[in-house]
Length: 122
Length: 329
Length: 165
Image (cartoon, rainbow over all chains, first blue to last red):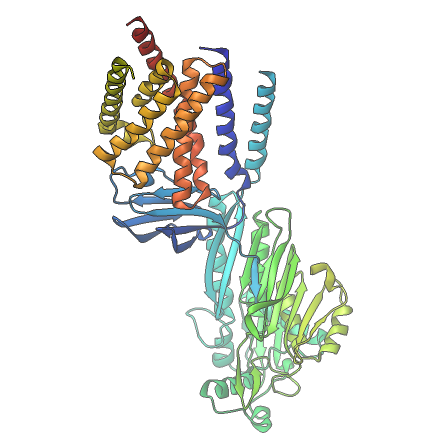
């Protein structure tokens, strides 16, 4: 092992760390929403700030997938796919994080709720 | 190697700073006093928030039942009971919360030259009937003969209430704001200072979750998809009268459910008025009386008050501001 | 071209294909973490790189992707492009670093492994139209390092054996 090998490893680790931290820093503390896309088209928007334990049934390419939300987090609970990769991902809560269900052609993106007002009075 | 180490530490520092500001938003909805109420609490203490939401439900429910004119509840002396089941000249002890609400309103009657009058029940009933049956508008005679509206016919003494004549009490102008104020005070008493309560046009906010200002949009009465005024602030109350509120149209005129005690008719001074102050009950009362006076009178009235500002949406579609409004814009 | 070299390259090509196929059939590995691959075939690619140079390694690498496509994954579908992108970036950067950066064979292997992941992420970002896929990279990187080391060591062993041969 060359000395440069070690430096290389350290550099890669640092880059990994930086990319890892970025979504956590930028995460808006306020309200988040999850956008669900089927074949790159937006089919549902879920408000994560409602905090009730809630389940949603979404039609994926391979059948029904069940999405669960609670406490400002979201995950795919069950889905029909060979490797179950997207339900294995577990709970996701930071802005800019994604859950990818390739066989079902579904992506779930966490974004900040861009509503400009904290409240509206009439 | 040394540079890599310092870079590492720097990144670690960033993580720590980033993580420490995290706060979760909790949201809950209620339906009381004919209003859709939304409460948002920003906190890290989930259990406390869950407990708070339950207690908030209790508070709103209690004030809803106490101020309910149209329904009776078992073992509860509320407005329905007082208006329909209580004999004249008979004294009865009532729930302290109800007592305080009525007392507050009577005090405000005197402070507002009678503009806030919770004794208007009889007149309101006539208007309600005409509105619900869609039969036009009542005549002045009908309204005058509907019953007593003299506030002195409500007599409070030492936890008890007595009514004279056939007075009917209506707390619609103040109940929502009063209850909302209690909810806000409750939240602050248990340390949940970061919250927004939106009770259908009655907004109370605590401290901001990120050291910033809450942004509140006021809907344009002519086009509810538009916001005509933005109000920014912390630890304040924003209340609107007019605009969306219950009204009906007859022969091209809008008849709101806020009644002028002098004319017995709804006023036609403006389309809507929004008040900013620090107490929700006060805000509710103020927005009601401002709706009952011409805009210019209202502007003078507000300018003479400390820590209160207001904005009016005139019949001419013009916007009018109190003097110090800028600090909320 | 040297007949012996052609035969050798063909054998190595076949070997790399077989290794890929066997690898994809091991259920355990693929089930735990998405995208994890031992990348045994890469050991062959690295071997060819060090024995015969960039051109041949490039050829073996790309041909392997096409053949696997024909045999298994299908041609010109998304999985095919994942492989192609990963293989391309991998071999190009490995050759580059072998030539211009002082790294051991293990280091080159790590670079190959890391670039393979990056190649796949790039295709995923384009295909899913979501820049946010990039946040999967840290996990892939962490995995790339040990697999890179292992493959590198395997390649080194093979290289020593081959040279003596």
